[in-house]
Length: 298
Image (cartoon, rainbow, N blue to C red; front, side, top):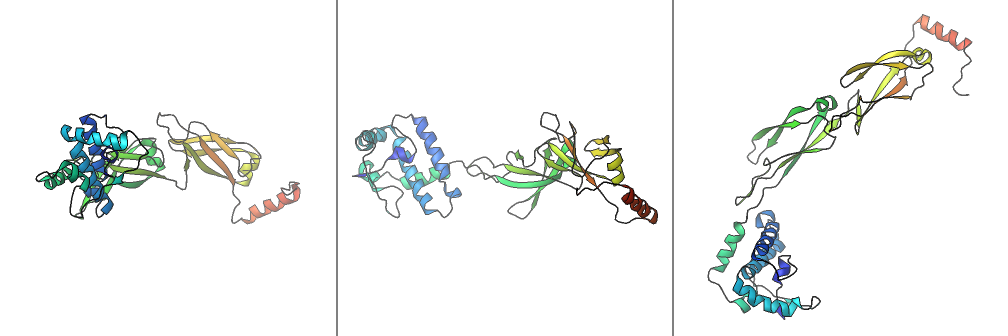
């Protein structure tokens, strides 16, 4: 039998639906397959014709009652029963099934096309990214974002990046994306924030990592040194015999959480050997080599 399941076309599982539910289902389906969002898609063109046809019948109480009698007979009482989908002429906006059972409405093609065009479509979102330094976002900042529109003109927007934003987190500017059509809202601008590591600090989660370089005698004898953090410097005590690779963790001196708390500052020790020695330094090292019994390879 030639038949079209209008409820299935509008993603409705039953015919026991209100006029408002039919209208909402139509709007969702029409937005999904709207010509402005599916340029050149032949399948979408056919889908929008089916969607409009279904709404034309189901939104009218008289034609809905007539259709429901057939729907119950063909689909409603037996979900497994197969029905033959009705064909459509190449230049027709409605199927053969529609004309067979509901006749030919005057000016229906123009009215259907107008209904599709008048469905509000939200503009597409625009996604971009910006790079910021760790020191910048620790305190928060305002950043300029440059966008180029279809006319080739630059659009400059100011975005506030809150203190403690996470690496890779996105900021949404409502209505700053592409323009909507038929009264639809503009899309949004979505900005991904990339926090860059630098020579001094590396960021992992909310913890900061930095290197502290010591001379061989500082590492051997122990000392007290100044270590930089994001909000000043602090004294760190180095124990005698400290080895390269040792990590000193300083609580609450890392990056910020959203609630204002902070991660840790992790200081990795690296013992540096002089590239060049004075004669006196060379003599002292030679003397040390003779009197010391230390051998790291044992």
